[in-house]
Image 1 (cartoon, rainbow over the protein chains, first blue to last red):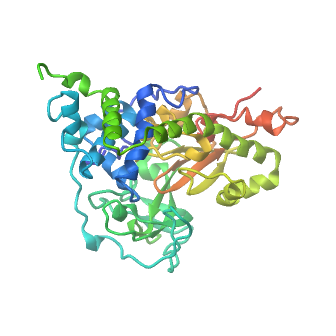
Image 2: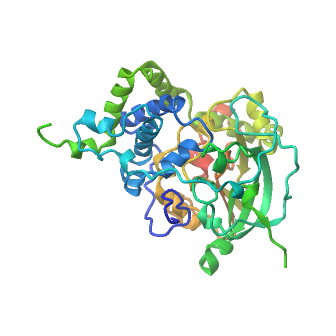
Image 3: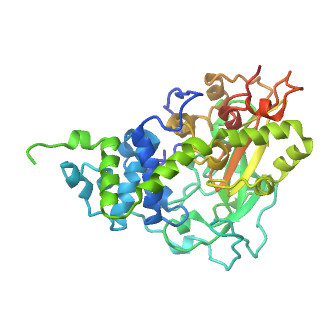
Length: 235
Length: 198
């Protein structure tokens, strides 16, 4: 996990066996059902922009992210956070209703929204939107990279929301495919416009990511937005 | 308040019950819409949708090619729409190549094809480990791959969603599409298992 980023855990060491149940039900408890249903009603009046809900989840305290009932627990916590941030609940209102001490709820422990540095974000360009309610965009400019190009993302991403996993930052990988262009969540999650980007599937060999200890013949593919990537000269 | 309720008030179960009541009281949410959504994802949406696509791909080479080449076009023509399938890519397992899907940053998953993701897929254990030691993770989950098999991991970090097309089990040459679809498990379309055998 990189500093301050509770969710960015790809490749982190120290996790144990996967609790795998091939037959598990959609929901385990009634409260998970209610969280699922409530969440989409809450989103209608709060986080509407691409990436905004994910960024709210990423701002939860570590204890709430991991130990507040798992996935649906995170969603419960983020409902409270978004409702407070959008002014639909007073700060601490749910704690009062529950007769709990102020600060019991997860919203009180969440981190604030970070400021993005505007000139580190790519420019916004006018684009076509291919359909209703989609993050796909049709860009006027062609993709900067082609399949087979060697690319690299910077060692550290800008603070705030991003879809650059830390485990590939600073590593060299090859463009494997070009996906449809999308709204850039790093920008839209922060309300800074769509700034859509070409999106690439980048393939990394195991030993590039994990060194000589890597398992053999594994390739890890990550989808990255064009503004994350720089060309690497082949030696 | 005569005593502190903070211990139980930390539980997400207690909090969501109170939150739902509070939001209904404020007129911010509609309980019938909540109920309808829950019902939809418990009954109408699930891995049977993806399993149909896989079974058809096993029996119809032209359909298989279209699915691998342009899944969005196939889904549109089949009138399959819904959440979390803005752009879908299907990755075919074949002798010597195995595919497995993860979302390390959250829990992205093709909902409209597979339903809601299982707990293990969303767990920090799976998300952290399957990109670093996928062979070990799959072996722990009961899928042993030989060392020569190339293992391709797909981390769902953009809005592209991945579906694995498992290999057709041998001995199923005379099976109907419906019989074949029954062998296609959710786990096999994530890539942590093979399709079921007879």
